Picture 1 (spheres, rainbow, N blue to C red):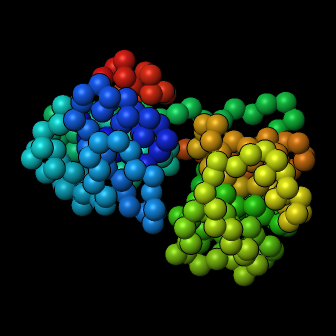
Picture 2 (spheres, rainbow, N blue to C red):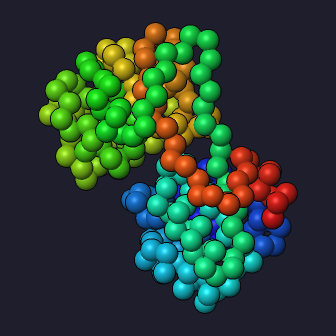
Length: 234
């Protein structure tokens, strides 16, 4: 089985499949310098687009492909759908649900990082990952940029780079937002509990959050929302 990974759900699924005796090859994009490796065989780096992935599928003939990449890895998800269709390979998309606002949340939705950049001012806490930071390069105020590895995009003039790997606790996020007098948080609708502490902290402090909507999933792709559902389908 080919498992397109990089998420906590992908690692959990790989561990369960390997424990079940399934031969799993997990593919990681290679964008992080020190990724957390899953159980089973691991390959790092891209396939070379749709044709490269299709060629790999024809050569190795996996019983199925599970796309458990990040909800915003739209390019990989689209490539997987096209390559699996071209080769007649079964495809399952494992994607955790997005977040849902609760009482006290002040959320504003954006269709893209560029839209989000046009919606913020003051001291901005940017937690969208290192890709796409350039969309905020023109912001005039102070911008806290938190990511695991340094971005390659240009940073805002008033950027403060925070290199850190989560998960973070609510207390961590409260202390950070208070220390830097954050006015607004910007994040992607990644979903899951691992990175939700910043949303809780923003709610407690009355800070608005700008969330970037997820890209759509290609038509015809079977989608499940949990590792348990994926195992049941497989």
